[in-house]
Image (cartoon, rainbow, N blue to C red; front, top):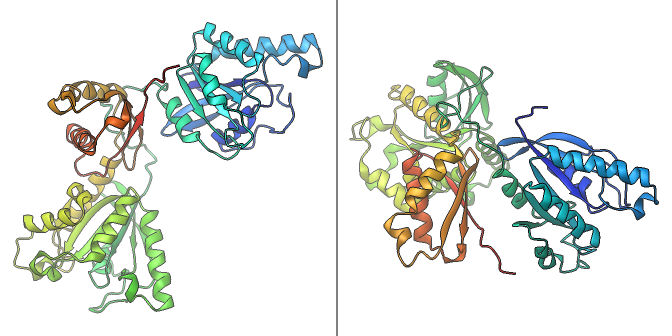
Length: 458
């Protein structure tokens, strides 16, 4: 195991659910979990991911339960010595207590030991889903720990918030250019789905990209029934292109085979890394946008995919192929606000116009989705934006505390805020838009989570 990874220890009395939590976090069954005190006698460790970062977690024997050790003083001493050593070697402690049993003298004694250690502590109130549970959460505030979370290790409740709290303790690995993730030698194949309504030219553009007549094409709808995948390389990048059947409005789909085809199409783009949504430019009379195109775009963005919209058959329009009319972009954005972020391009699959530019833009958008921005840069940005007129006005009765990136594809950011309830929609939009502009994420669907971190008064 690598010593530079964050070391997390699960600690607490016996039978509070540490082993169940260990199995939940590591997605394993390595720890024996049984409803009887003292089952875990040895510490076990495993590497696992806290969202996009790696850490090492250790399950430990129960602490201070002299009665459960059957008055075996040698066993008590051995267990407590091991616990002291684990505390010393850990970076963060997750102190687990039992919401059903409530706070016990052992919990209070152990909390004093943890506070003396000087280690960061997250207090996890487990079994909080039980109807018979005492009001342990409010009682647990007496222990004096800032980070407290209600969880159910058995059912998974509260685990996401626990991961958020753990994530902020994992240090950034700074590089000379810590914004772009460099491709690895064994670069993952980019799965690229081509989607759209029937007869918009999906199979034609796939054939032009592959420079082969892999897919049947004809000037009528419904020829493609199954999703077909083909591997190819472009400018040193490996891609898998997926041609999909056209999707019509649900009300028009009555054939059983077509329903299966539509279902397969949705599965294809949900499992893709990037999507090209093809729109028939020749059908855009007066700039009117088909509802089905908007529905598809919305669903693709909802699944966090890198999206590029390609207006095909531009040779059948009066417009310049390299100059998409602003009213088309504007009409898309008015109909679906998220499309302000999405790149548009005019292409002609038949005449092979802008095919390479379309691939370049799609790959660039995909790479942008995978960008990782260091926590230090994000918090420098947040310090500056906090001084803006809007966030300094009397209406902004909240304070931005801390920001970190917790995921990519799409880039996902977690912002801790004091007095979160005082934030308005325009505050959130301003912060999100400024974040995207500051870090060149305009063409990407960014997700920002605002988490309240108001300190509760005792």
